[in-house]
Image (cartoon, rainbow, N blue to C red; front, side, top):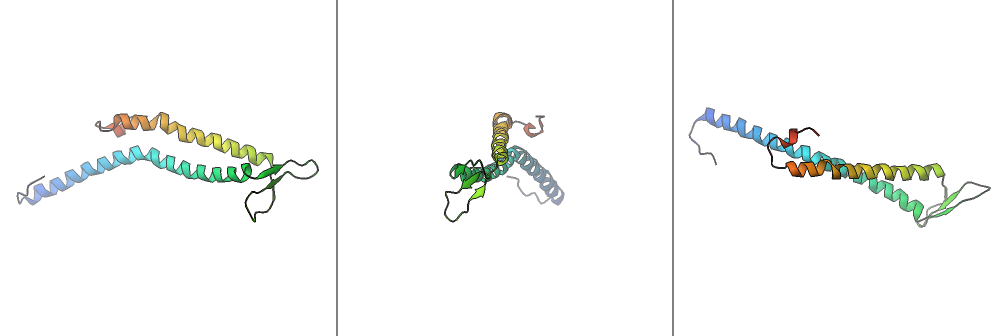
Length: 127
């Protein structure tokens, strides 16, 4: 803890210096947490995609030869709807893409951030 020596110029210098140190620490923290922010955003997207999956997987899909394929919902008061193979493949690909988005930081960026935690200039190291 700094002791007040009644020197306004020195006090102002400490304010400028210590606030700069705090800014640097916050920047380092935000750099490490940016991967977590990305993960949280991807988890929100995954939640939506799982909801779509639930509608399809927990419903009953009927392949019809003479009319469009039908999805009968398992949820009350939800009307039947047409289901297209393209939407199923799109949903499967969305899951596949999200798996990579969730996995990538876990194998590269988060372990590196934890390894470098507390080292000087860790946040400025190249990826």
